[in-house]
Image 1 (cartoon, rainbow, N blue to C red):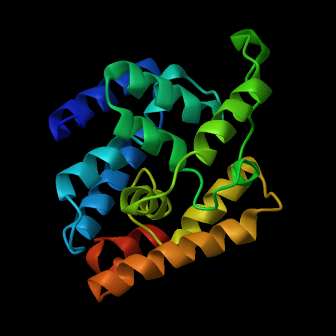
Image 2: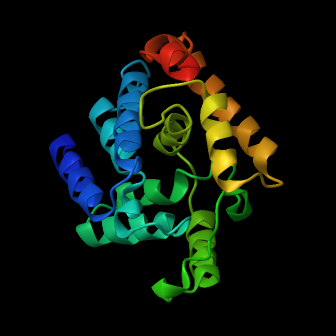
Image 3: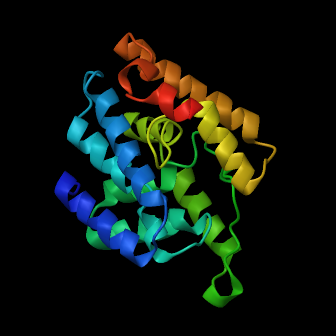
Length: 206
């Protein structure tokens, strides 16, 4: 069971007013990308894909917490009674299923009084028990195809992330894993993802 698209939009609006930022519009574009791809892949539900994309970053509603948005989103969606969405909150940052591959910091501001290392270990344990399915891979891909302004080449999105958080040793393996996911879905669609996402050229080279 997952929320409706209307419910997902309500979660985004409420979350935005708690922590205003580019993440909400980015999430909407991730949802749109997931829907457009799912419409061309047999066995995928476009509504489900869109909702999962819209809510993958919902943990950001709790503030600027770095990588802790992963576990915050998981816990929030579990409390709401949507474990399938909670799962996506966990998996979306890990096309390479390794806790060390995530860009950004696990250490929150001191004022938050949270143990970032303990939270990281909790994410690692939860992640290790998951066998990725098509929706996990789809949202991982779409997260790399969308900014807050629309769709773009994955490389532009990646450069933006590295400029914000800095590189890590898992950077290239993580990119390669995402390329494999892209190829996986393109093989099923028979077309490049860039051909079905509007505005890629304009957003990439703006």
